[in-house]
Image 1 (cartoon, helix red, strand yellow):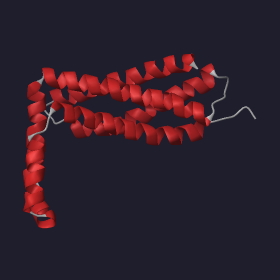
Image 2 (cartoon, rainbow, N blue to C red; image 1 turned 180 degrees about the vertical axis):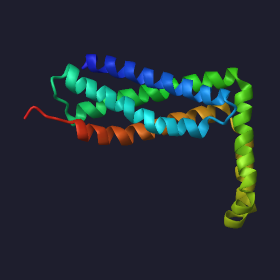
Image 3 (cartoon, rainbow, N blue to C red; image 1 turned 90 degrees about the horizontal axis):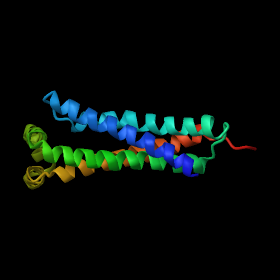
Image 4 (cartoon, helix red, strand yellow; image 1 turned 45 degrees about the horizontal axis):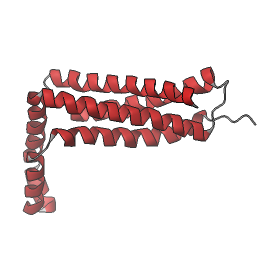
Length: 170
């Protein structure tokens, strides 16, 4: 089983590297990279999970992969991806405060643009709480949001991909 984990760690780390590079690459273009990063994760996480499961099934395990093995390998891939991405974004945003401020300003501007709708639907108190919450946004919150979405996407797609790629010896 340890050979499975070594492949899963490497593939998860590679996925995290792509995620961090994409995040800061989009940020260098002058945009708020948080939403494009989530969309990138929605595509990249299942690709890396599928790549790991494909590799283990056909190259390491002679065309055999149980659902449990698939779930375990997928878990290692997406959790590795999420944790390394979290650390990369956290440290990167600490060392690039101008990017973090741009993210924060963009989120505040979106909140202000939706002010009338929010007040109409939910009331002034909800708008004020939302605006205050976004005003107090931290680097940790941006990074943990990325980690949570990667884990959610990873779990969802790992279940699907493990079902598709499973093949028992029977």
